[in-house]
Length: 253
Image 1 (tube, helix red, strand yellow):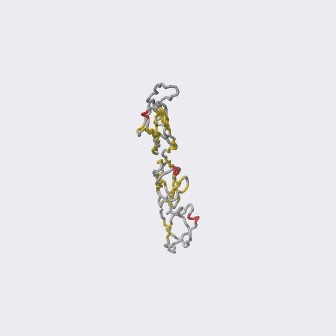
Image 2 (image 1 turned 30 degrees about the vertical axis):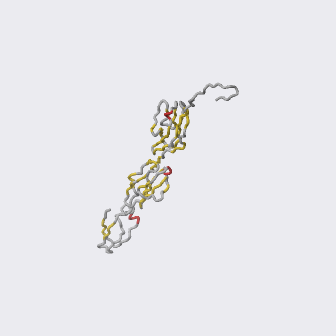
Image 3 (image 1 turned 90 degrees about the vertical axis):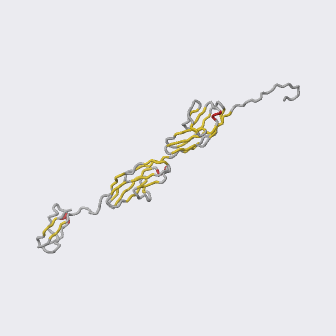
């Protein structure tokens, strides 16, 4: 902002009008105050007309937007914004467009995320001259599998068939069945070792024992309860009946 000097050479000094200050030639003023009240030595320094408050500045500028997050249930989730401003910055985080009480820092942290926290997060960044709202950032919370129906004990005849099953809910589920704590593989007699249903045919006594399944996804693992398979053998005659000779009216042995 520069300055020009105007030498006063007349005896009349008046206050410049608004139209004179805003005119096309604001330096050509016919009426000004002589600060020394003397037409011979009076001199006025004219400051250019200001169209805005020199102490004000623009609203904040966001240089880094909050980013989308995906976390497991129970993990922490932190949204961060980076902004610049000539004056003090204030923050207000929003969840699905509604202010979050007490969320007034550049980072908003959820200590232990749950499914109800899923949604859209944004932040209003403000100073005394205005504000700007960040882009929306989404939070997705992954939930471990939940088993609603556990496998149950089975009694089945030797050389017969049997099936264990489990019902679970969750996203992108995978299964692994175990026998005596060892993972099972499919074979000529066993199928479904990595599905929700484990099936047997041509049962053998070696198949007897405890079975359980671990249901997994990106959020974690959930083991089922243990169920027993009991292979039932057919009756075995250890002593055949013997021939007898009896007299009429007597009881046989």
